[in-house]
Length: 405
Ligand SMILES: [Zn+2]
Ligand SMILES: [Zn+2]
Image (tube, rainbow, N blue to C red; front, side, top):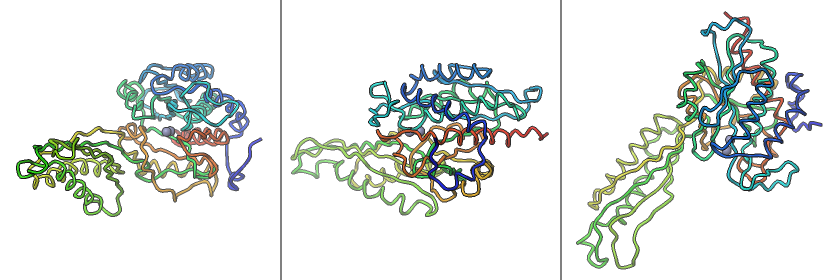
């Protein structure tokens, strides 16, 4: 039986058919949990997804972003190609880590684990797809997007876009959902604006002229330059960031020298930049280099910067976030909508999809008792399967209303 950990659960307005489907969905989810696959290796997973979609009578396209799958569900109208369309996205990949849950359905693949709940995300979307294909209470088209490689900076979302996701399957908006430990089961949230941070790595190479430690006047000392740069960069967030915006600049690697009596030729500083807005990210990436070069000037050293771009910030479109909040309130009841939780400084590659299309990213409460995402003790909360699937269906039906037009 389902145990309810949140009083608001009783007010939830879930779809009965999906509630009845829970046991079957749990079996799909626990099957996926046993056979986790990491970035671009989701062969068994994508086979499973494609087979399920086909068994629901859904048109299946494979091979986008190597292992990605798209299921196309047509609505009730005669498809003229101009009717509205939306994309629902689930991620399929697992993490390269050992599971420690000791569950009966724990991972059977060494050093592979569904520790972020993507097994559950895949299942929620499959459950919704089956319902949508059966009832078709909408106009236009729904694209069910099962993407590879969200984890580890592998950017499966971008790979699918590069393989023509939005050209081959033109859609007006795209929607993502992630289970969220720390938020009550039966609650959900769509941030207005930023939901997840962008994360970039930068490496500053400081080039001086080394020499004898006792004759500093004959050198240009990169160690002194590194110290000045380290201090100067602390002024970025404190003096150049709008107090209402959020960012982190952390210097995490500082390397120089090999002997106590030698001033080295070079020093390097490595760090990470986390931002919530594309404009802040761009500005800070420029400013890090400018501040570093300026601070190093007094030492006569040169500085060059390498940027290793990570995922951009995940930014919900305001109107779509408000729309999602309406659906959340309808499906989960008056207490089901959380508006308090602040955005997270972690990053998410659904950001690439939201850069190109309208839409929003929804956090679905996984319960306060859930282990954290990426913990070796994490297990997706199966109570969420009918909740997430109901939300997906109601988003489609509200967005592609069969009464409209
Ligand atoms: Zn993750
Ligand atoms: Zn995840």
